[in-house]
Image 1 (cartoon, helix red, strand yellow):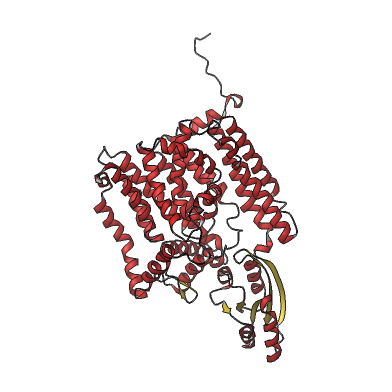
Image 2 (cartoon, one colour):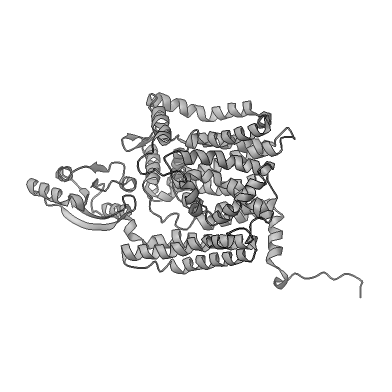
Amino acid sequence: MDGSVAQPRLSLRHFSVAQLANAVERSHARLCLVLVLLSLVCFLPGFSSLQPMDRDEPRYAQASKQMLEAGDFVDIRFQDEARHKKPVGIYWMQSAAVAAGEAVGIPEASTTIALYRLPSLAGAIATVLLTYWAGLAFFGRRGAFLSAALMATSIILMVEARLAKTDAMLAACSVAVMGGLARAYLSRGAGVLPRRALLIFWAGLALGILIKGPLILMFAGLTAAVLSYKERSARWLLTLRPWLGLALTLMVVLPWFVAIAIKSGGAFYSASVGHDMLGKVGTAQKYHWAPPGFYLLSFFATFWPGAILAAIAVPFAWIYRREEPVAFALAWIVPSWIVFEAVPTKLPHYTMPLFPAVTILTVMAISRHFVGPHRLAAKPATILIPFIPVGLTVGLSAVAWSFDGMLPYRALPVLVASSLAALYAWRLFLKNRIVPCLVASFASAACLSIGVFGLAQLDLRSLKISPRLAEVARNLTCDNPRVATLGYREPSLVFLTGTGLEMLETGQEASAFLSRGGCRVVFVDSRFDADFRAENARLGLAPALSTRVHGFNINSGRRVDIGAYATGF
């Protein structure tokens, strides 16, 4: 014996999940890597195969495409119509992504919707990582990680990560601003904030204004106002170095706001403020009205799988409302939520920038063992955890069978796995194993993303009307055909077929379009068939019926039957 102490050998048999978790938790970088991987699993399935989703997504994408076509990066237009509703930030990001795609040789980059979605994907991942950063102002690494993972697996962020719109990037800007504001409030005795926090705060504010105007000011302003009233002082805001920060913010945002005012003659402000913003406040815009309480009800779907746990945590927030971390989270959520509920125009994603605060508040309650089966009605209420994946499995199967006459066979095994994982999460909750319940919920959400977005939507061919019509135009044997549509007017068709798509109103206009000669194709909804055929007979036209496209328009809520008529090919 040489007297040395034998070292134990590490074997896989002795390497537990707890040891792995502890190893990961020792490093911010490792935790962030796990969050990025979880985000990619939740956000990437179907990212490129999902068709442009009417109506907002293709409007944004088409306006960005026209910026590249015209070389005008100040004005925002959809075909010949000025799109003066939102600032330019997201259009610049989308245009840059498509330009980069063209530079590296991606074929048909200008009509590849995945390129326009890249800023939303980046915004969604940034939302998750910034939720982790914001959470560190409230508790340790594990709590911040669970908060960020709840955000990554929420249904609404999974949806917005795949849509070429403003909302995922706005959520990232919002949580950046609120994370900086939280540090200013919770460490106000220190008198100074790290430069990193100041940079993140003011960068988030400037970018948020360029993306969606004053909305981010509402989130930060209402929160600061409530907390300043609570403290009877606003001096804690001075740690954010407001004069320097505001000067830098104006340097970033002012050039474009001045340029668009000059170019549009002030029309941008009358449209964006007078019509878009005040229109939402004063009277509900078409199709988007909902009564107060809409966001409270939709929350249980949009924030799944964490929604029911957040609901169980509500009494915790009331009981401990005077504690500073809880007070900040409530000031972040409640005032802006009330505004959203009061405004007649409502869409499910409007409240998404408030969800990081919900995750933080929920994890606070879990960390203090407040959330569990011992709470009133918690056991039956948490059936919502498996209800969403089970309901989607049944619902998507019914939709596929009704519209396409087949089941989504590729997706069913993964959807069943999601349902089983959610049922297991419910069982763990009933056993008061809340953190393992969360982990099982994350697994269920990942499977749900793969099943719904990655696989099920591929089999729902009846919903892919615009891609099928655009394919008809591309398959004509002539170059650069002129394209028009009658009765079917979705923006996705403009994006996929080209800026020159003509929107017709009558069967007579459709016949006149074909009579002009050359290679042409017109898509005619069956509602206009009689007038179209009668006018063709009068003019002596005999256009060839290339095909008929049958499907279901989810925006109008009706089945469609569209004929594609071509000449000169």
